[in-house]
Image: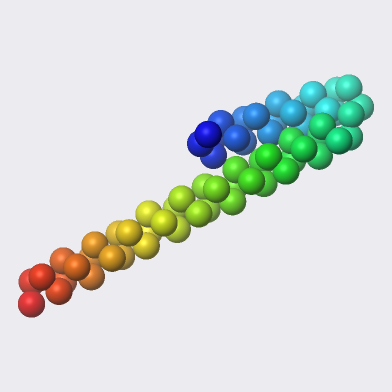
Length: 63
């Protein structure tokens, strides 16, 4: 599941937990959102690293 879907799922769980007074569900929703943020950060880092590798390859192939 993508980070956006995980974040949405977490928000729904958190809201449901808040409405029903279920603190465990609310906490689980917050954890899902934190996981989504971590996943998005990792995806962005991977993309940046890949771009950097491509840039270095391009420079080396021009020499």
